[in-house]
Amino acid sequence: MTAIPAIATVIPAAGVGKRMKADKPKQYLPLCGLTVLEQTLHRLKQVPALQQFYLALSPDDPYFPDLPLAADRQIQRVDGGSERANSVLNALIQIDAQQYPWVLVHDAARPVVRVSDIELLIQCCLQNEQGGILATPVRDTMKLATAENTVKQTVDRTTLWHAYTPQLFPTVLLREALQRALAQGVAITDEASAMEWAGWPVQLVQGHSDNIKITQAEDLALATFYLEHSV
Image 1 (cartoon, rainbow, N blue to C red):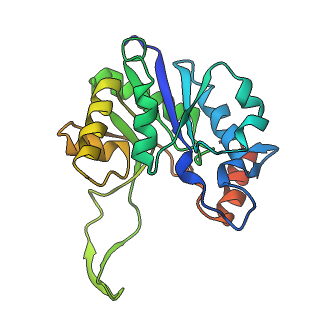
Image 2 (cartoon, helix red, strand yellow; image 1 turned 120 degrees about the vertical axis):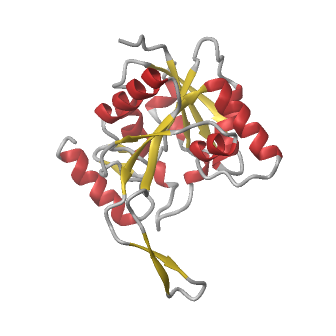
């Protein structure tokens, strides 16, 4: 069995401050007695391999200091950047790659990720010695649209997957990939896209589709349902 090293975790939250008809960023909205961010950290901290957490927040974020998490020594706050990739890179620069040779990146707005899925991702990546992401195969019929939002063609879905987080990669390789991609102006939508651009393989590890990302107000109700039913 592959020995599991200590893993650092990066949680980009600076880029999830869009309002959902609320008076604060969505990671601070209430969810089952805690904030969305607290629920996310609660899931992540149930995985023993995840030892240190780097939370990328907007420098002027006024909400985090009021949370009990602010006093947690396992959590280090770092300044977020203008985009997700910049936030993740700012955190990676703070991580000692010798102490934490692998880094896991997870969205602050995915509070119902299953602990078993995180552990499966870690196991698969370490066994295969390559990075990977949680994902699920596309089940719906997929359409390619024109600029006028009419259907151009039906896309073969058999090789299409929905990409989720967490995403797990060797610390040094991810840091170098992000640095190079950003320096060259490459559009980076997630960590996997940076690694793909750099020429590294990224494996798909099938998780569960209830690993939703909160982007709209109705997503809070769905997340509440999942949390109350202990998925």
